[in-house]
Image (cartoon, rainbow, N blue to C red; front, side, top):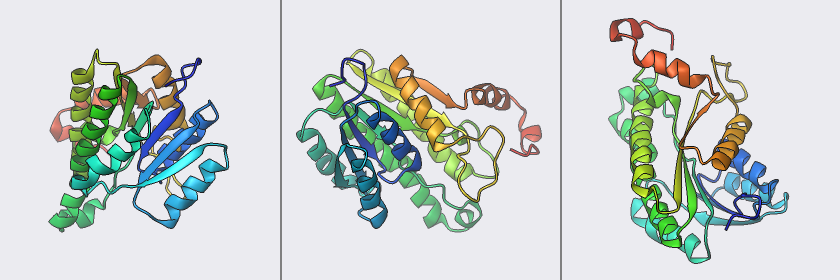
Length: 248
Protein backbone atom coordinates (compact mmCIF):
# COMPACT_ATOMS: atom_id res chain seq x y z
CA UNK A 1 0.00 0.00 0.00
CA UNK A 2 1.03 3.62 -0.45
CA UNK A 3 2.38 5.33 2.65
CA UNK A 4 0.85 8.34 4.44
CA UNK A 5 2.50 10.65 1.91
CA UNK A 6 0.99 8.85 -1.09
CA UNK A 7 4.28 7.33 -2.26
CA UNK A 8 4.21 3.75 -3.58
CA UNK A 9 5.96 1.35 -1.24
CA UNK A 10 6.46 -1.35 -3.88
CA UNK A 11 7.39 -1.18 -7.56
CA UNK A 12 7.43 -3.80 -10.31
CA UNK A 13 9.64 -2.60 -13.16
CA UNK A 14 8.99 -4.46 -16.40
CA UNK A 15 12.22 -3.86 -18.26
CA UNK A 16 14.68 -4.04 -15.42
CA UNK A 17 17.55 -2.38 -17.29
CA UNK A 18 15.50 0.49 -18.77
CA UNK A 19 17.23 3.84 -18.21
CA UNK A 20 13.88 5.56 -17.63
CA UNK A 21 12.67 2.74 -15.42
CA UNK A 22 15.78 2.78 -13.24
CA UNK A 23 15.74 6.59 -12.99
CA UNK A 24 12.14 6.32 -11.79
CA UNK A 25 13.06 3.60 -9.30
CA UNK A 26 15.87 5.73 -7.87
CA UNK A 27 13.55 8.68 -7.51
CA UNK A 28 10.86 6.63 -5.80
CA UNK A 29 13.32 4.94 -3.46
CA UNK A 30 14.33 8.41 -2.32
CA UNK A 31 10.62 9.00 -1.60
CA UNK A 32 10.12 5.90 0.57
CA UNK A 33 9.62 3.08 -1.95
CA UNK A 34 11.13 0.07 -0.21
CA UNK A 35 10.54 -2.99 -2.39
CA UNK A 36 11.50 -3.14 -6.06
CA UNK A 37 11.03 -6.04 -8.44
CA UNK A 38 13.20 -5.91 -11.56
CA UNK A 39 11.76 -8.03 -14.36
CA UNK A 40 14.03 -8.75 -17.29
CA UNK A 41 16.20 -11.26 -19.08
CA UNK A 42 19.03 -12.46 -16.79
CA UNK A 43 22.20 -10.55 -17.66
CA UNK A 44 25.15 -8.78 -16.01
CA UNK A 45 23.34 -5.49 -16.70
CA UNK A 46 20.25 -6.64 -14.79
CA UNK A 47 22.38 -7.84 -11.87
CA UNK A 48 24.22 -4.51 -11.81
CA UNK A 49 20.92 -2.60 -11.84
CA UNK A 50 19.69 -4.62 -8.87
CA UNK A 51 22.92 -3.98 -6.96
CA UNK A 52 22.74 -0.24 -7.64
CA UNK A 53 19.22 -0.02 -6.19
CA UNK A 54 20.11 -2.15 -3.17
CA UNK A 55 22.89 0.34 -2.46
CA UNK A 56 20.18 2.98 -2.09
CA UNK A 57 18.51 1.00 0.68
CA UNK A 58 15.76 -0.82 -1.21
CA UNK A 59 14.92 -4.50 -1.03
CA UNK A 60 15.41 -5.58 -4.64
CA UNK A 61 14.30 -8.86 -6.16
CA UNK A 62 14.89 -10.04 -9.71
CA UNK A 63 12.36 -12.03 -11.72
CA UNK A 64 13.22 -13.60 -15.10
CA UNK A 65 11.03 -12.01 -17.77
CA UNK A 66 11.11 -12.03 -21.56
CA UNK A 67 8.63 -9.84 -23.41
CA UNK A 68 8.56 -12.31 -26.30
CA UNK A 69 7.78 -15.33 -24.10
CA UNK A 70 4.14 -14.42 -23.58
CA UNK A 71 3.22 -17.99 -22.55
CA UNK A 72 5.29 -17.49 -19.38
CA UNK A 73 3.99 -14.04 -18.41
CA UNK A 74 1.15 -15.18 -16.18
CA UNK A 75 3.40 -17.52 -14.22
CA UNK A 76 6.41 -15.20 -13.93
CA UNK A 77 4.48 -12.07 -13.01
CA UNK A 78 2.01 -13.99 -10.91
CA UNK A 79 4.91 -14.98 -8.66
CA UNK A 80 5.52 -11.31 -7.90
CA UNK A 81 1.93 -10.59 -6.89
CA UNK A 82 1.82 -13.81 -4.86
CA UNK A 83 4.47 -12.26 -2.58
CA UNK A 84 2.19 -9.36 -1.68
CA UNK A 85 0.49 -6.27 -3.06
CA UNK A 86 2.26 -4.17 -5.68
CA UNK A 87 1.56 -0.43 -5.61
CA UNK A 88 3.07 0.48 -8.97
CA UNK A 89 3.80 -1.40 -12.18
CA UNK A 90 5.99 0.46 -14.67
CA UNK A 91 5.97 -1.03 -18.16
CA UNK A 92 9.25 0.29 -19.54
CA UNK A 93 10.58 -2.36 -21.93
CA UNK A 94 10.83 -1.90 -25.66
CA UNK A 95 13.22 -1.85 -28.60
CA UNK A 96 13.89 0.88 -31.15
CA UNK A 97 15.04 -1.44 -33.89
CA UNK A 98 16.85 -0.15 -36.96
CA UNK A 99 14.41 1.34 -39.46
CA UNK A 100 16.66 0.98 -42.52
CA UNK A 101 17.59 -2.61 -41.74
CA UNK A 102 14.14 -3.66 -40.57
CA UNK A 103 12.43 -2.47 -43.76
CA UNK A 104 14.38 -5.11 -45.67
CA UNK A 105 14.20 -7.75 -42.92
CA UNK A 106 10.56 -8.55 -42.11
CA UNK A 107 11.56 -10.92 -39.32
CA UNK A 108 13.41 -8.09 -37.54
CA UNK A 109 10.44 -5.76 -38.03
CA UNK A 110 8.12 -8.38 -36.55
CA UNK A 111 10.40 -8.72 -33.53
CA UNK A 112 10.08 -4.98 -32.88
CA UNK A 113 6.30 -5.20 -33.16
CA UNK A 114 6.06 -8.30 -30.97
CA UNK A 115 8.28 -6.84 -28.26
CA UNK A 116 6.76 -3.38 -28.14
CA UNK A 117 3.14 -4.30 -28.69
CA UNK A 118 2.28 -7.99 -28.31
CA UNK A 119 4.60 -8.52 -25.35
CA UNK A 120 3.43 -5.31 -23.72
CA UNK A 121 -0.25 -6.16 -24.18
CA UNK A 122 0.30 -9.55 -22.57
CA UNK A 123 2.28 -8.24 -19.60
CA UNK A 124 -0.06 -5.29 -19.07
CA UNK A 125 -3.16 -7.48 -18.99
CA UNK A 126 -1.58 -9.90 -16.53
CA UNK A 127 -0.59 -7.05 -14.22
CA UNK A 128 -3.89 -5.22 -14.66
CA UNK A 129 -5.79 -8.31 -13.58
CA UNK A 130 -3.59 -8.69 -10.50
CA UNK A 131 -3.92 -5.01 -9.59
CA UNK A 132 -7.68 -5.23 -9.96
CA UNK A 133 -7.77 -8.33 -7.76
CA UNK A 134 -5.91 -6.51 -4.99
CA UNK A 135 -8.16 -3.46 -5.44
CA UNK A 136 -5.56 -0.75 -5.86
CA UNK A 137 -2.38 0.26 -7.66
CA UNK A 138 -1.11 2.12 -10.70
CA UNK A 139 0.03 0.86 -14.09
CA UNK A 140 2.31 3.26 -15.94
CA UNK A 141 2.89 2.53 -19.63
CA UNK A 142 5.80 4.13 -21.49
CA UNK A 143 4.57 5.09 -24.93
CA UNK A 144 6.34 7.58 -27.23
CA UNK A 145 5.67 10.69 -29.26
CA UNK A 146 6.69 8.50 -32.21
CA UNK A 147 3.30 6.85 -31.93
CA UNK A 148 1.40 10.07 -32.62
CA UNK A 149 1.86 10.03 -36.38
CA UNK A 150 3.69 7.82 -38.85
CA UNK A 151 7.08 9.19 -39.88
CA UNK A 152 9.38 7.99 -42.62
CA UNK A 153 12.26 7.84 -40.16
CA UNK A 154 10.76 5.37 -37.67
CA UNK A 155 7.35 4.10 -38.75
CA UNK A 156 8.00 0.51 -37.66
CA UNK A 157 8.84 1.53 -34.10
CA UNK A 158 6.22 4.30 -34.15
CA UNK A 159 3.43 1.97 -35.26
CA UNK A 160 4.18 -0.41 -32.39
CA UNK A 161 4.00 2.47 -29.91
CA UNK A 162 0.81 3.78 -31.50
CA UNK A 163 -0.84 0.42 -30.94
CA UNK A 164 0.40 0.26 -27.35
CA UNK A 165 -0.80 3.80 -26.66
CA UNK A 166 -4.35 3.10 -27.87
CA UNK A 167 -4.39 -0.18 -25.94
CA UNK A 168 -3.29 1.53 -22.71
CA UNK A 169 -5.89 4.27 -23.09
CA UNK A 170 -8.63 1.68 -23.53
CA UNK A 171 -7.32 -0.37 -20.61
CA UNK A 172 -7.46 2.74 -18.43
CA UNK A 173 -11.10 3.23 -19.38
CA UNK A 174 -11.86 -0.43 -18.69
CA UNK A 175 -10.33 -0.18 -15.22
CA UNK A 176 -11.88 3.16 -14.32
CA UNK A 177 -13.67 2.92 -10.99
CA UNK A 178 -11.91 -0.30 -9.92
CA UNK A 179 -9.23 1.40 -7.84
CA UNK A 180 -6.58 0.81 -10.52
CA UNK A 181 -5.03 3.86 -12.18
CA UNK A 182 -3.52 3.65 -15.68
CA UNK A 183 -1.19 6.40 -16.90
CA UNK A 184 0.30 6.71 -20.39
CA UNK A 185 3.64 8.53 -20.67
CA UNK A 186 4.71 9.98 -24.02
CA UNK A 187 8.34 11.11 -23.97
CA UNK A 188 10.13 12.78 -26.84
CA UNK A 189 13.52 11.54 -28.00
CA UNK A 190 15.58 10.53 -24.95
CA UNK A 191 19.09 11.97 -24.89
CA UNK A 192 21.87 9.45 -24.43
CA UNK A 193 25.65 9.63 -24.52
CA UNK A 194 26.94 10.07 -28.06
CA UNK A 195 23.52 10.86 -29.49
CA UNK A 196 22.92 14.43 -30.75
CA UNK A 197 20.15 16.39 -29.08
CA UNK A 198 16.86 16.52 -30.96
CA UNK A 199 14.33 19.35 -30.61
CA UNK A 200 12.23 18.88 -27.47
CA UNK A 201 14.31 15.89 -26.41
CA UNK A 202 14.41 14.79 -22.81
CA UNK A 203 16.39 12.70 -20.31
CA UNK A 204 15.57 9.60 -18.25
CA UNK A 205 15.68 11.73 -15.11
CA UNK A 206 13.22 14.25 -16.55
CA UNK A 207 10.82 11.47 -17.53
CA UNK A 208 11.15 9.98 -14.04
CA UNK A 209 10.23 13.31 -12.50
CA UNK A 210 7.21 13.62 -14.78
CA UNK A 211 6.10 10.10 -13.86
CA UNK A 212 6.29 10.88 -10.15
CA UNK A 213 4.32 14.10 -10.58
CA UNK A 214 1.75 12.35 -12.76
CA UNK A 215 1.26 9.66 -10.14
CA UNK A 216 0.64 12.26 -7.45
CA UNK A 217 -1.90 13.99 -9.68
CA UNK A 218 -3.37 10.68 -10.91
CA UNK A 219 -2.91 11.91 -14.45
CA UNK A 220 -4.04 9.75 -17.34
CA UNK A 221 -1.59 11.11 -19.92
CA UNK A 222 1.83 12.73 -19.42
CA UNK A 223 3.95 14.40 -22.11
CA UNK A 224 7.68 14.91 -21.55
CA UNK A 225 8.59 17.68 -22.04
CA UNK A 226 5.18 19.30 -21.60
CA UNK A 227 5.29 21.54 -24.73
CA UNK A 228 5.58 18.39 -26.85
CA UNK A 229 1.81 17.98 -26.53
CA UNK A 230 1.20 21.17 -28.50
CA UNK A 231 3.76 20.29 -31.16
CA UNK A 232 2.30 16.81 -31.62
CA UNK A 233 -1.21 18.24 -31.85
CA UNK A 234 -0.13 20.63 -34.59
CA UNK A 235 1.76 17.95 -36.55
CA UNK A 236 -1.25 15.65 -36.39
CA UNK A 237 -3.17 18.08 -38.62
CA UNK A 238 -0.44 18.82 -41.17
CA UNK A 239 -1.45 17.50 -44.64
CA UNK A 240 0.48 14.38 -45.63
CA UNK A 241 2.21 15.88 -48.70
CA UNK A 242 3.66 18.57 -46.46
CA UNK A 243 4.29 16.30 -43.48
CA UNK A 244 6.45 13.89 -45.48
CA UNK A 245 8.78 16.77 -46.36
CA UNK A 246 9.20 17.99 -42.79
CA UNK A 247 12.50 17.18 -40.99
CA UNK A 248 10.79 15.39 -38.11
